[in-house]
Amino acid sequence: MEEEKSISVTRFVESVFPFDSNTISANVAQRQGKTQADVLEEWEEKKAKGTRCHDALDKLLNAKFSDEPGALDKALSELDDDVKFVHDQLLDFLNDRCQGWDLHTVELPVSCKGFSGRVDAVFTNNLGEKMLVEWKFGSKVWMKSFDEKKGIGPFKAFDNCKYNKANLQLALYSKICTDALGWRPTRMYIVHMNDQINKTPTVLNPSNAMIATVDSVWDEMENARSYLANAIAEMVLGKTPQEIRDAFGLDGGSDNPSGTEDVPEGAAKKERLRNLKDVMVDMETLSTENNAHVLTIGAVRFPRKSAGTKLEEMDTFYRRVSFESNESAGMHKSSRTILWWMEQPEEVRKEAFRPDDRHDLEKVLKDFSAWFRDGQSRYIWSHGSVFDVTILTECFSRCGIDPPYKFWNVRDTRTLYDISGVRMSNYKTKETHHALHDCFNQIRAVWVAFSKLAKVSWIG
Image (cartoon, rainbow, N blue to C red):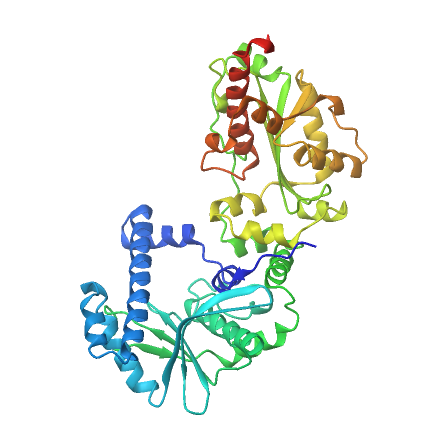
């Protein structure tokens, strides 16, 4: 079996305590009388400054404990003016909490049970004891969630706030150091520095409750990615629509699930587009197996030559499939795929997992068959011959329904792109991993491929 990739401690923490940047930035913008774009830009600037502060601390720490004369003054002189405040706050922390401790290492790389990461700073004393420190910058380390949001899985009792994110981070590093390096830290600190809030650093201890929770589930974590994916699946599957909406910070459903604007069409043009013989299909799933759990199904009728046809004018089919009907049909969920989804952009996740307007799998298949047969569709296309159409055919089989297409009419874009020299990556928009948008992207590349082949003499 292929070894599963590791997940960073930071990514794990962000998935356990997800941050809904879209909703929160919109609320902040409204409260402060700014545009959402301005708020997001400010956040990016603060994030970039935090990275520079972090780098500055690393340089100062190494210089402080260096034997080289004047190393600290030299390091300070090389810093940008807006991050020099960390020098004084670092010295305050060292004088207050680190008497009798020496620097062990900066940015200690650690890995265990599929976790990987770097501890910001490790100190040691003459007894061989270790102290872990995590530096935090930016706005205040809030101890409570403003909207009463909680974590997921075993961390659902903890508020989704900055403190608990840092809390979990240190608790995980403690277990990783114990298992992988053979020592458990006797002290751990979250050190927050911000020149706009305090002239001295705020020093926090991780909570005993968080440490105890990580201790209690550590033995279950054979692999971090699988454990997280299962926790996420447990959160999503079997929940009510409102519970899922709350978990992902979703608002109400869309009245236009296709994601395209309605375009007024003449009856003749609409009929022509409906009677096209080729259909592109794309599916978003929770696995790569033939019986993958289906999140969404998208399909678009298209002509093999663009002839000025606009994508938004095409006849489309789009449905979200209910979690319950997938379970009833025995569809497969993969830990890797679920975790891959949680690493995708926020809007992509929301579209795939939102609970609004989801339908029974059997009903979706019957609707698709009716839509397919309603025109003169014959050929069904997908990006590759062993994924979308294969999964769709398995869905039909499990629901006891004959597919509306014949197996000899299945067409594959990958082969077409290969023989025509078209690179699919050149025709992707930013709206990927949405079943309809992926269909549109694939159709654009198909048009280019057929155009190229038409110029080859032996094609005819």
